[in-house]
Image (tube, rainbow, N blue to C red; front, side, top):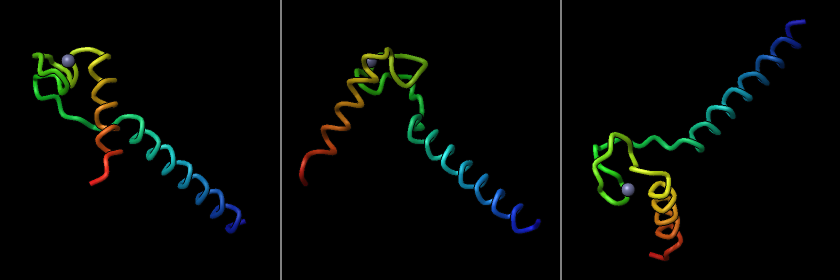
Length: 68
Ligand SMILES: [Zn+2]
């Protein structure tokens, strides 16, 4: 019986870890600076609108593709 419980515990821990990792991937933690990260417009959030968030993400992606 103990063996079965251990297997279930391990599976639960793994699922939990995967959920946390997925949550981190979906929501990168960015601190709000008072200005939009993309266009520098004053905003209480990280970006002033969803388009800036999308454009910023595209810019970051493009930078990542560039060879050093
Ligand atoms: Zn903006």
